[in-house]
Image 1 (cartoon, rainbow, N blue to C red):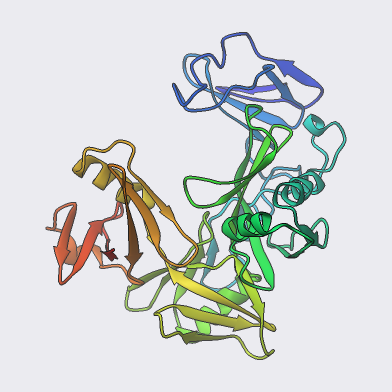
Image 2 (cartoon, rainbow, N blue to C red):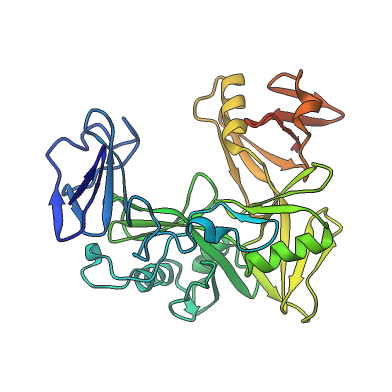
Length: 362
């Protein structure tokens, strides 16, 4: 094993952590990390501890996340900046490999076996391969029942001919999770297989190509792909736009990359024979949720992005739909504003970076 401060990365075989290491972490208590039931951390996995020696996280891959090991970032370090004006700040774990925890099975095959068994579908190809940028594209078929098709549509937003996703953040070790597919509290898809939990978020098929199309449409603009699949675009005048792609991608007439506005206020992005809808998205879900949780004295308040450009807020047992604006208000314009306010029918929330964003509620 390799020990560095409060991190242990297991290189060969496995280690068994002392009893009680996880005792304060199950059931949403303590560090809010579910117990590893047998206490085993296998080769290729990393465990992190707090100052009291309690586990605060365990994940597949190395601590730095920059090697070619399964679970490490597919596009680490400086390689993220591979197109003019484009930044990829997402950690996109590599799915190709055979983690020891899976007893020789391939991680990507296991993930899509679980997807198909849970949703009653069959992905084409059976095991999609990640592109050089970490994106997976696949079609969904099979003789699923009506309820299974409904669940598949709910989970992956299967309204298109193809699904385009990338895995995001660390692949967590969590043996309390049974194999299956679920939607997380952040509106993303989680696939649990044999104690490994992988998060998937919607993606454009070719992030670098998308960034180039943005630069053409808005000369001088910079763009960033973020961990949840959303994009932040900053124009030369300093205006920031935030949008998120739909999970589904449809076939379209081949031609140059284009953006077009739809009647419902969304954008349609077409390139390389594919078309995908882009929705406005909240810039800072963490601050949005924290601000209104304090305002309404509801610690259980949740704001979860949906698949149609709205977010669902649950406040004191009541459900509301929030529709964010595309652009942010610059920090200088709202420096004297409170945490939130109402103006001309829209509610505005101050983000952690000092900017603000308006939204409507229904």
